[in-house]
Image 1 (cartoon, rainbow, N blue to C red):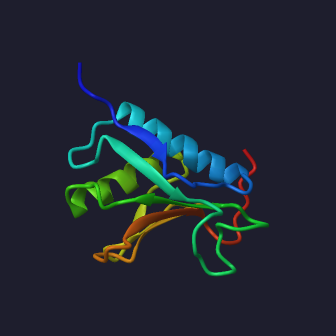
Image 2 (cartoon, rainbow, N blue to C red):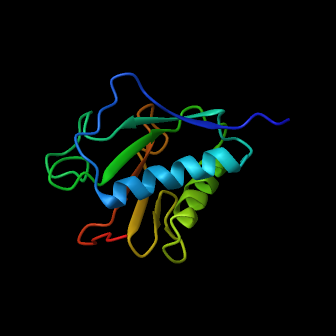
Length: 137
């Protein structure tokens, strides 16, 4: 039996609130890590920040939006695995096709993922509902 990847949270993780969009992102992350075995993806995918952490004051992480979450990337074995993982999670949101802009930004109709601080020790994947979009289901 193959080992499955699991979704975990970093100690000190906090979510001050949950929007429908944020809940859909969590469910997509969980669904992908539980059913898919992507080469290069670690056995634990770690959620590092929602409303905790240091973000710009207008960030989607905070009130009133609560639409942003970050996941760790330094446990991934290569950049291709990171990009494949992002595409799979965005596809799991069933929100239209995934468009990539440059090496680090990925979009669907209502969602956005970004390899933030690409190549630096603070690199992570930032997931959020696109600004100005409202998730109703």
